[in-house]
Image 1 (spheres, rainbow, N blue to C red):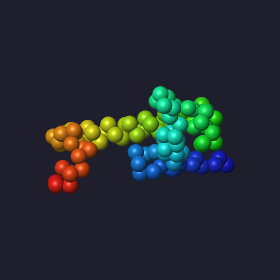
Image 2: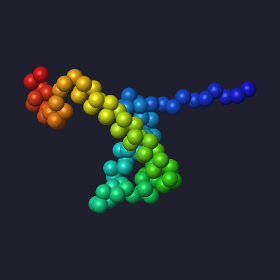
Image 3: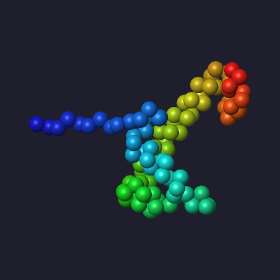
Length: 94
């Protein structure tokens, strides 16, 4: 008998898996002062190989970027100005 395939666990945040979320969060610690990623350090922190850490980070980042762009498209279609998103006082008044 063949074993059933295991479905990937995803979080509610942009469909990210727990591993992708972990890689994205730890990637902030692995940025150099020039803005480049230290893949060896990320691999060490996530207990993976550098190539695997880079790939998991890339797929997670793409999912996050796609979710962000879809949200912006929804805001723009409603006719709201996207430049007021960071202004908390204007959002609280609505």
